[in-house]
Length: 459
Image (tube, rainbow, N blue to C red; front, top):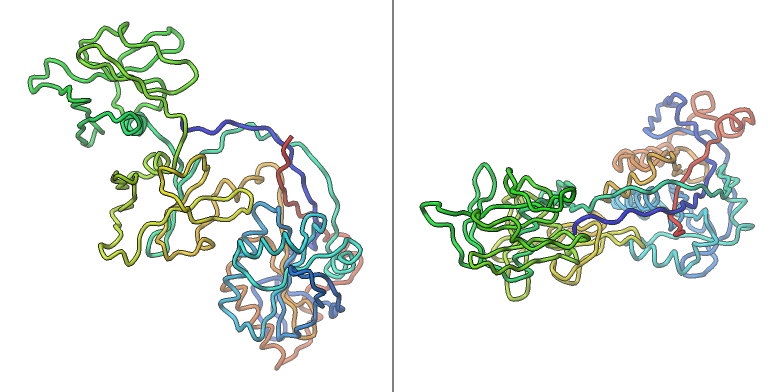
């Protein structure tokens, strides 16, 4: 009911050869202190590519005090969306009149102007995203020491990836919880689906069900509601010795403790189910066939309030933080779009949002791009391939001054390096003895590495 089926797939890998010299010691030159890796290279010549609107775009059409160049591709599942969002944050920290941002594809076969246009809209960015033919792009890649080759490997993906719920609190802290339903959540969801009524109390030991469909445990406890679980090995119902909060979802049943176990209907073998046997012997069974965001929310969050209404469930509180009565803000539901690799605001209530692996709750004023990427997406390839990406900061003469490796860097430190590059224009120093050279053949031969970014391909 709550788990996604495992799948096997092939991973198509685009290997990007980058100048992997981040293991060399850093130093400051002439008083200029950079957090990223300082380079010493001549200026990059001008090239003309095609922008997201299909128009010719000269790289140096806007000679800014500093230029940021990122090499990306839109089918990248983790690094590229993260870099784009980080650069979006950096752009808000620096003067847009003095700093130019440019993204350049390494996968022109996929990244057409139309694809880049959609990618920019999804990520809410406006700087040029450039593409072209391989012949047009190759000199640009060469200028930045980026070499590409395509390989295909098979990676075993026969594993379960749990659904998750991400929460962004009003103070901008966030956390991600796995959807881990237990018997209690299965019972609550089943009762809602079948219109069962029940009473239950909660203590330090969990929930105690005292009444189902008006059959209430008497005060003298001459009988009580007993939880049962179906034993697949013996094909019989067995009384459960733990509480409903401690048993995993499965084929479960509630019946008065005086009920003969053989009188409980045999469950279907292919679905988790919840069966209720009433005092008069009548029974009903619920099978949750479609998982919605309400199911995920109550199964992932310990302290959450989701009252029901004529329009479905709605969320009022997480970890005792409630939306104000004046509705100056409210808890907004989001879902992870696997195609665009971004969060999107749900246009339907949590009961109607179904079959989503990752959902998120955040105050309605939260921008989709500020919700953290699900951990399972960010780590999808960690156990199979390693990857790294370089982003460059160039000065006003189009000389690469600093490079940043990977995508887990700090935006404020990146912005500081931009400011340092611009400040160095007023105080030029000889940096040849302190920086990492860019054109020594032996160094290039030993330093070029393979940056691997994977995109999934269905078998």
